[in-house]
Image 1: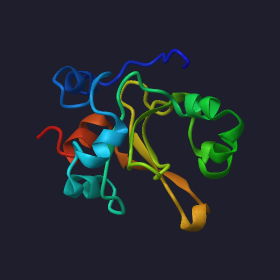
Image 2 (image 1 turned 45 degrees about the vertical axis):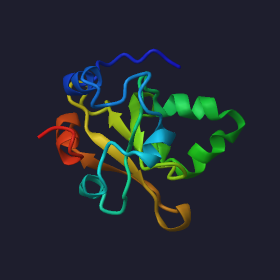
Image 3 (image 1 turned 180 degrees about the horizontal axis):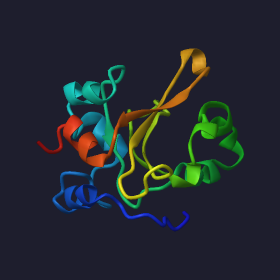
Amino acid sequence: MSPFPYALPRLLNNLIAAGVWPGPDGPSMAAQQLAPRVSREHSRMFAEDETLICLERPPFRTIADAVRQAGSQGDFWQRFGALHQIAPDQALIIGDFGMGSDSPIVLHFRENAADPPILRLRWGTRGERNAWIQGAPNFDAFARLIGLVT
């Protein structure tokens, strides 16, 4: 994993420290399938076409890391990841919509390194015209949308 040059949002660090967001030893993404930390209703508030959000445990990896880790299967990202729309080395994966969704939720530091927006990969029909769309203007808004803070 590449060293990440940007600071995480303060609220994300606070949620990890408080045990609200999974820490390094917290529930895995697979465990969150059965016991989600984000309600179905709050998941839909963030992404109307989704019903589950799973929160990634730190240390977080970038989309570029995911592409490298995929190795010979990295063509998935080339075909479906709409990589031309983001800066993969500046897109930190903080969650997704559950097993098999292949739709990461990222902090995207390219436009605003101090207060990055939250993007999600939305799939088009049959994997065509997939696009990164903004789900929240920053992490604080995202945390409110998904019910982690009031």
